Structure formats: structure tokens, C-alpha cells
Image (tube, rainbow, N blue to C red; front, top):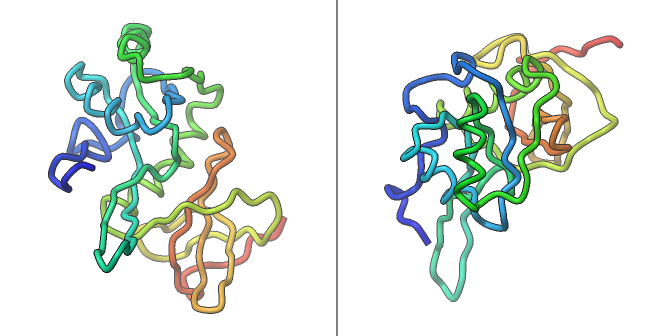
Length: 183
């Protein structure tokens, strides 16, 4: 298990935004539990990437363990040309590389997740939803973002879906910051 300081950054190069990366986006479907190792190798090979992660806290035999886990297990997003794609393949940490058909839509879906993670907000994995009330955020750092609202007994959460992966993440949100979208 890695110490917190040994984990790769969420976005590399650090300090940049995925919206500003140049090149084509690809999705690396990694071998089991190789996401962070692949990210570390991409830093060495200077391939820009986005690896959304979240903290998981568990208790085992009276000990509290904090682990930084990929938000979308088995996937890492990277950007570049065919040389970058080849560099990722040469790491021997991928099972497959998925081409991104709609580059703009992928960035549109990933940017709110990047924003929340960089702000230090807790973003959790969530089941991918096909039905539910679609809403738009009207205030705060996610203003303009669309997602699906889910209510739990304790809180209201906004589910942010990544259609290409068939996976989603959610964040707690105040009901006064969202409005219903009529479809």
C-alpha cells in the first residue's frame, strides 16, 4: 500500500486542466489494480493523463486504514498522439486501449469531476443510472453542469455519469443549487 505522498497526481502535468490538454483522448483499460502504477509510468514518459481517485476509509482489527482508490476502477484517461498511445501500450499495464469517439463529450463529462477533486470535495463511485431526474447546477463551482439527482435518507447527491465507461460518480449537493431540466 502506498503512502499518501507516494500516490501519483490526479492530473499530470500537475497544475494543468484536462480541458487544456492537446491531442486525442484515449481510455486505458488497465490490468487489475494497475491504474496508479500506470499513472506513475506515464509521468516518467511525459504522457498527460487524468486518474480520478477517492479516499476510502475502512477499519480492520481496530485500525483505521485510508486508501486512495481509482474512482473508475480499471480505467485511466490519457491524451496524446499515436506515440503516446504506443508508450502506454509498452508499459504492459493495459488490457486494452479504447478510442474516444466523441472527444468533446468525454471532456464535458470529466471536467466537473476534475473540478470537484481539485477542490478537495469528496466524490464517491456511484452506480450508473439510466433513469432519474436530470438537473442542472445553478451555483457554485459546478454551475452549468448537468447530472442526475439521487436522494438518500441523509443527503441529496448529484450523479455525474461518464457514458463511455458506463460508470458514474456522485457528490453531495444542496437542493437550492440545482434546478430541474424539462426534457
